[in-house]
Image 1: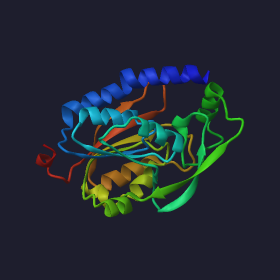
Image 2: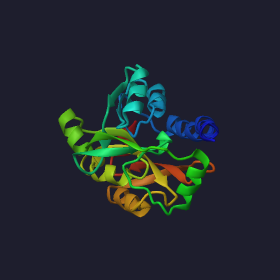
Image 3: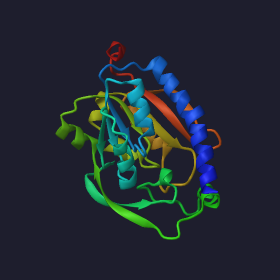
Length: 236
C-alpha cells in the first residue's frame, strides 16, 4: 500500500502540483544570480528544479535527515550547497524522529488523536520500530551572518509543521528576502500547529500572498508570498 501511495503521490506532484508552481515561477519570478534557500530539501527534487529554472543561482539545501542528505549529494549539482542541518527558532541539537514515510518526518510532535494521521497510517502502514537521529538545528539569522549572506531572493520552506519555528529563527534575514514559498497544513496532524501564526508573521514582515496551490486529494497547500516592502524594480 505504501508503494502504491508513493507512486500516486509522486505522479500528482511531478505532473500537476510542482509543475504548476514552477510554471508560475517561470512567468512571474525572475532571478539573476539569485540566492535560494530550500528549507526541508528532502531528496533534492525541488532544488534540482530550481537549478534548471535559475541556472546561475546558488541554492542552499537544508536537510537534517542523513539518508535524504546523501541523496542530494548524489545529484552532484554544482549549483547546490548542501547542509545536513535543520532550520528552527534556536541553535541546538535535537533528536529527529524518522517516520516510515520520509516525506512526513518532522521535528513537530504528532497529534495522536488526528483523524488525518490515522488515515495516513491506515494507507501507508506504521513503523514496527521507530528510530531517530541526533541533528543540528540552526537559526537562519545565525547561518546567514556566518556565511555573510545579506539577502535571499527565494526561500522555500517545507518542514512538515515546523514552518513557524523556521520563520522565527529568520526574523532579521526575512526582511531582506524577496519571495517565500511555504507549505501550509490544512489538517490536525501536528500538535500546536497554527496557520494563523504563520500568516501573522508574514503580514507583519510585509509579505503578501500572490498565489496558492492546493495539492489534490491532500490536506495542504503551497503558497507563494512576495515581500511588498522591497521596491518592485529590485526583482527585475
